[in-house]
Length: 231
Image (cartoon, rainbow, N blue to C red; front, side):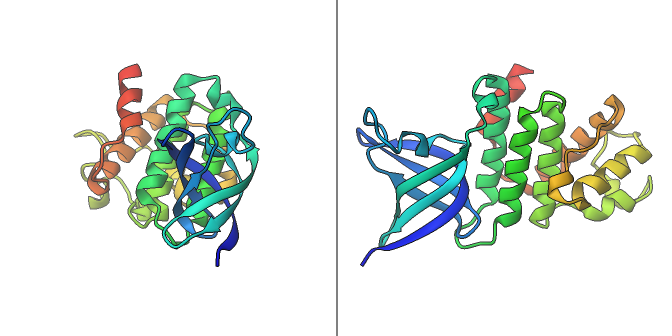
C-alpha cells in the first residue's frame, strides 16, 4: 500500500530521466535529503512542470514507494526569480545548493541547513548584499552547523593556535573580523545577513572560509569552479 507524506523543502538539483520525467534532490525539513521522481513534468502543459526547477522552495506531496519517492503535487512558494535573471547570482545559488547536498543526509535533522539555505538564497536576491559576502557567510555557518568550524575562533586572540593557517603568513586577524565571525556562527539564522563589513574584513573572512573549507571538505564543487573563472 502506498504511503503519502508532505514535506517542505528546496530542490537542490535535477536530472532528466527518460523522455518526460525528472529526478530531483530535495532538502526537506521532515526527511532530510531525499530523491524523488517527478513523472511527466517535461510534457507540455504538465501541472508539475514547476516542481523540478532547482532552487525552488515549497511544499511537496510525495508518494513513498518501496525504493523511491514520487512527487504527486507541489506548491512552490518561492522560485527566487531574481536569480533566474542573474546568471552569476544563479551560479552562487547553485554553489550553496551543492554544499547543502554535500552535507545533507536522508532521515537526518536538516532543519537548520534548510533554513540557512533559504535565507541565503533570499540574501542573494537582495541587491544590497554582495554575493561574495553571502558565499562566505553561508560557507562558515554551514561548517558550523555540521560541527566542522572552530566557533571558538571569534574569541581567540591574534597568535592563538586556532588561527594557524587560516590567514596569509604574517597577517593578524582584525577585531572586526572576530566580531563578524561571532555573528556568523552565533546569531539566529533569520538575522544572519544584517551586517556589513569593510573590504579588509571581507578579505579575511574569505581567507578563513577558504582555509577551513579546504580542511574539512573533500570535494570540488563544479559551480565554484565556474564562479572562479568568472572572477
